[in-house]
Image (cartoon, rainbow, N blue to C red; front, side):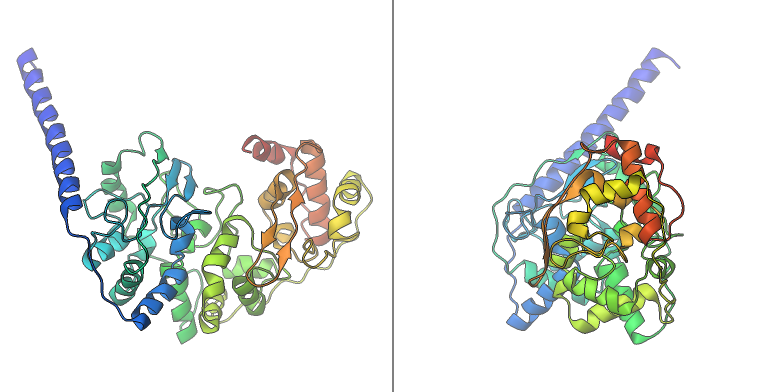
Length: 418
């Protein structure tokens, strides 16, 4: 091809790029010129929208610690960088004050903002695509009747090439409309309600399902657990995974309603979910969630007898560092430290969360109601990789019937990620 031909192609490509940028700028300008919406709703409609917004855990991503309600700023960590929850108050400049109900429903179900730019799938539109229009409109009525907060949205820290939003059109074509496989089996009214609460509103699979290289949910393994989105792993919450760690319907409901059960206390991101979402749901909806997660015919929860273990370095580390709070044999102290005898992190076949807790420690936990747990110090500076592995191995063998030894290399990898 001649030099003139290449110049012509380059000129056309440059023209196309300029046109795309110009169209985007005009779209954003026009979007910001629209009127701020005034939404009339009855107290009952607003209250229904509030309940649905709690079920959808909107505050979990859109209300920062110490920030104005729904004004954004929550950092959402991903393998592609940090994304911040946006301002969804009725503010006309930084929030969604110019959104109509149609705009809001389109953003929820298609991941596209009013001005046409693509939303990152950290906003779970892949799950919300099955939300009913009536529920979307109710949430819209609630949000648009909250105080407007003039809070600018924080800049994202997404790395190249994931920061090219136009590429999300291709991502959406590939992954945004998959055939959803249910995590359990059932057909009862409670199971169907739970399906909607878990798969759509609660979007539990966004954290608890494995993800592929491009960040897409692995639909062949729904709710099978993931280590992709935070320091702590989101555990396997399939019926098989829950039963293997001793969960039944009663303990699940207690955990979702209060954050505390014999199997676990809610920590990290799950504590926010309990505090801002599941603890606010009606008893029948919490029951429906448990029915869906376990299925209409739940598997019997596994019971684990504590094993006799020989004295070794793991036991010595436990007695030296842990027994003062957790008890000499892991019995725990209410509102101080959890019992380790039925603890899900000890029973889990994946030692990830147990290792992280030993290395990093845990902050004070204040649960809905009056329950709390004191802070737990981390021991990363006190124990080397082999010692942490020995402690985790002893705990898992003594209380969790996990015979496989924890490898020091797994500890080293998690230590490196601190």
